[in-house]
Length: 589
Image 1 (cartoon, rainbow, N blue to C red):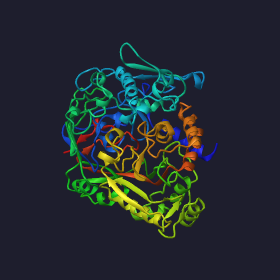
Image 2: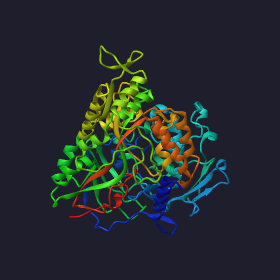
Image 3: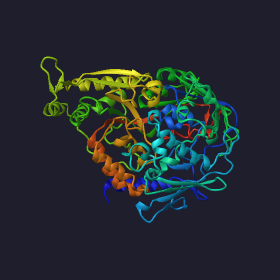
Image 4: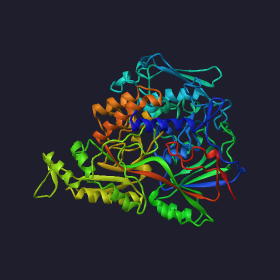
């Protein structure tokens, strides 16, 4: 066994052993009991804009909708799968997963829901809602211009190269059938052939069938937008219900029909949005908010100075990395030699020293952060500005003596670098990248955009004229963080396979490399994590060679936690987000 596989095997073992089996279920950690009542105030420097989980995967949106809309399965703070609306996590051991005789024969997943679940309006919530969400995802996906971010995850297709009616024809869907039991408590999902992203399907938050069954997909894309009155009419499946929502914040009250666990302990939650990190940090230091979210290690010094009578600053390891997205459809960036030269020019350690002086933050090479079970070491371009210039010269991108700019066949290298507004750390980052690129003869221009309304806005909510939109691809270089989930296949296939370019899914770099596509497909041909390791190794190596993005550093998550917060364990490392267990939070007077 190679060192990488030995390390992965150890991590897989810990992933299994870290959970507690009770009656066949995997149970999440339980905080100490608190006294019911009270309100906690959350803060984010970015505003949530979309609460329909089909159409967003932005951090602020996820944290906001997880308070009110939940999934069958979630991920706990130790990175383990845990039941939320489901009664247990399906496994081979508990009979929830039944492999076929061969990969071509497929397999079956028995997804069991907790009995007695209700939507906030009192309607029954059960496996029928799960089946509806699958079917509705196909309806939405057929209208590609809507930009359904998670439709490909909900309803994956076998051959994404097909077009028209053939793309979502029944025989081209991995899911052959979903059969709901008479009591509505079990959905038996039959897969035509092995599909490695099956866990990604059951970790998606759901919308209510009885509200959306007669709603056109186009209307569904806007009905849950923050600021619309219609958002307040959508029944919730989670521990809280939205009572007011705008670009300034969202208000929630306890959902008395939440039956997945004991009732939420808090009477209410208020989620407040700030125009900048500085504004949010000041509010936390003044004792005006209880949880200051969505910050990184560079924010720790400012938060750690909080008066102990007000709260504390937590620093948690997470599955996140800061990176540069390289839009490979743009002039120059369509050449892997240029992308490689950019990587060779960036001094990641120098960058970290400037952003986070005195810390031991690790420069990033491979995409998977430390602690993810599939991570292997890959070969990344070395720091070598002189070598970067030589590579550009060799590839034909030579300096024009008159302009001083690098050109090839009349095309000049000058990049538009985008990031979200209100984040000083990212502006400093792009300022340093600008210096590194200037040193090898590539000028760049820095531009910021509102995170929710533009930068991370869905395809349907932007136009070809919207600048610095990652889904529209109106950028050259984009700086943001990736947060990984527990499902290996869903993390990578929908982000890097050539069939998943927006508006289909999340391939925002527009990378299209046959060898990478082949490796991504291979990961999906195994349904058990231990069997995916070999294919995952090849996939990571091909991704490093294709170089559609440049990882800069692995992030730690900083959270301001006031003394009023009870039940907070630590920041969830995965895409489940910080509000995954808000029903367990309580107010400490």
